[in-house]
Length: 100
Length: 173
Image (cartoon, rainbow over the protein chains, first blue to last red):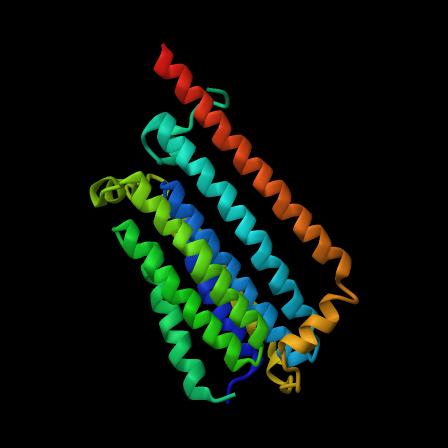
């Protein structure tokens, strides 16, 4: 029997994996990929709540989250490419100065 | 709501997301995120959220992750530079924080037995039902999202222009 708890447990597992990825990796590209995992986990719990509560609002929120994430990824990857051009590395530790 | 499909896609999702965090080669990171998004969209279909699952597949696996792949190939990163990136001093701290989050989540799940009693509703997220709500109750957020995308385009263009102009300056110098 698949209940709401199973979906929430799966979402929590994925969120934990993504959180470890964000906190342990120095690579900016890998941090962005792990952020996508965090968003995916929250999307899963939104859709599961929508299904088990009988409310369409959860699925609409997931729709908006996907759109905002697309904008975020575009800006983030542009910044990564710029950083690689300036510093020729994408390690987050190399970003020591606020103004270059 | 077949249990078999839930377990199948849940295992694929967990292993793919582990591979996103643990794989050394950046190409494998991105490609396993594609697999993770694909199985997530299959889970959405199991939950009868057809429209959102389709949008996830189109926008994420179709556009966003191809963009990631493009950047990885454009930057020409080799696996060695990625592997040395894993030697972070705060690595164990991050792992500890993740474990703490997982255990506190487990504690929260124990007190969440009410969720187990919830019944499956007859909500079916087809294009018709989602579209009706999107263009009536959620019209203002929808339009604001288009404004957000426009602002993102402006931001990227200004970033690229700045890069181009500074590139010219360094060439002149």
